Length: 112
Image (tube, rainbow, N blue to C red; front, top):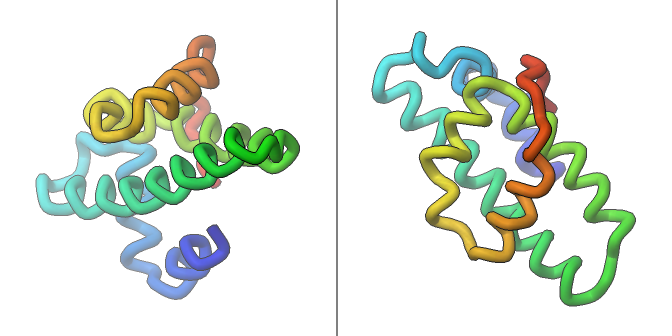
């Protein structure tokens, strides 16, 4: 996760695209949205792996931290749209977990 955050910190254009994909994906061109959602693919793939690891080894404390990160991302318009369009590509257990986190989530406009 630190590598992901550092990549966003080092690359201003990537950071802008990522934030725009979360905040207002409809304002992006098709190419920009694909790029922004590719960043989310990478982030969610990492979180999925971490989730599957934690559920196998019982590291609940770390998983709660990820839960806060996930709900922050999915509380944005683009995060919500991303999950609606791309949840199909993740393991069923992870989808159930994410859907459980976001059942009562209201859009906040915030993201990590």
